[in-house]
Image 1 (cartoon, helix red, strand yellow):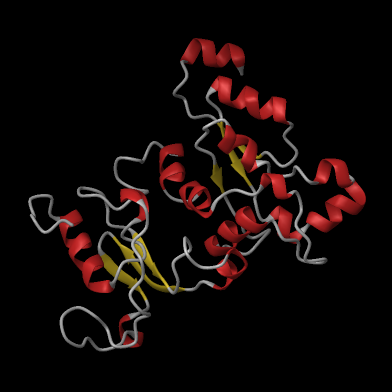
Image 2 (cartoon, helix red, strand yellow):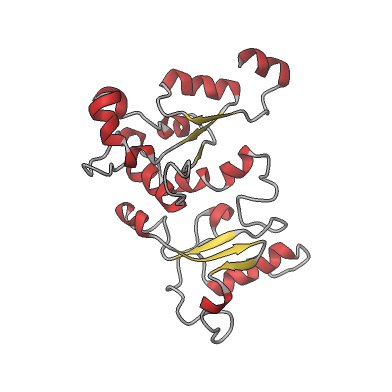
Length: 236
């Protein structure tokens, strides 16, 4: 890898998949070589107790999926679910990084490796887009991008950490068009663009990265329209 990086340059965005038992010195080597660690973070939930009791033992198990080491080094890491090994649930990816609670015992496996919810969100949005050289069109809500976003039942930045796993997707938009729920399941509009059975208005997220994801539906509609039409002046 060192020879390849020296020959091809730093911005190859080579990705190390899973990095389940990466040591801290190896994560540092990833940083030096420009390698993106993509952690299978839900390992802590599904198999954390098993790793601790059998394969790795307590000393090594606490550092599986070591996202904190990446954050401390300013690395734009990503996280994935590895379906069908685990269910394709992005909310669980967020929860597993923030809480690291195990499925069997309910204990926290390696609290020193927990990351903030904002770091977790970045790992499945803007960082993931960058991993595939798609940060100019995906990963955040900005004018000129694809307007791919979801409306969630609760704001992950403000909900208690232990309740992140209970967040549900209310609506999914692809390129500014609603793809979930299907048309027949959508509530009828009321005044303006606000739907009658939408969740209460939610606090906008910090910064442009994800601020549109949990805003009120009328603001999302305007943001999506602006993203589809860069000449629009209706940008908040």
